Length: 243
Ligand SMILES: C[S@@+](CC[C@H](N)C(=O)[O-])C[C@H]1O[C@@H](n2cnc3c(N)ncnc32)[C@H](O)[C@@H]1O
Image (cartoon, rainbow, N blue to C red; front, top):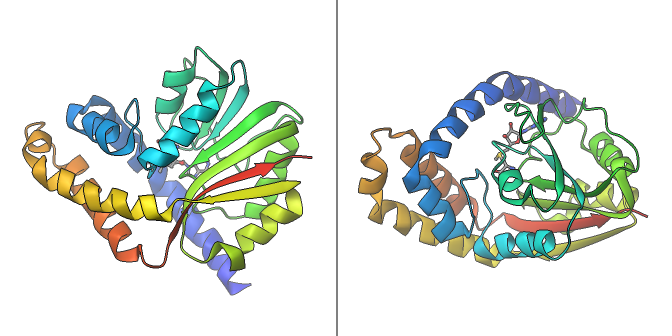
């Protein structure tokens, strides 16, 4: 009971500050050539994004998006829309994000808990590092299941701070979706953080020449945090399918 209250409180604080902070960070990374190169070389991303995908996870995501066309896709926590920009000619996207409103890319500024989901509408729902502070996760998962068409898939890319097999996330997903398949990319994740640290230090001057230290400092903190937690986290790609 108390932990649920704490979670709601934390989320309210997060909502208040996060939208503004994400927005100003996205403005910076969208302009940074050094960051774009970081995303491409370390993560295999075609554009600047703010996530923890390793090259293996990016490949799997792009394979999914390349091998089919004309899908209706919902990108939950779409960020500044890098993924949508890269695939908008192949699929029809809707994005939801707390911090971004972009009519051109069809990203609606909204809290994904409160969004009005249309039933049986999307072929695919994606959440790329956007499911961390969810106040009512089971409620959200039910909404995602209902907005998917029959056999539609929900793909989650995330770092879990606990053992998935014992987690409440596993129980919730298995209760709500017809089937759940989990790919554990923890090994690639550890390699990513190791390489990212070396890359960042070797390319510090490229970031410094852009005269703003925020991207370099944010990335360094993120790398240090993920490296120190790597022994107890799992990096997962979860595929939950609707009946
Ligand atoms: C780490 S970023 C990932 C962005 C994007 N998926 C990417 O790969 O670049 C997480 C995003 O989720 C969004 N987000 C977090 N909680 C949200 C919520 N409750 N409703 C809508 N968006 C949310 C944030 O605004 C942020 O843009």
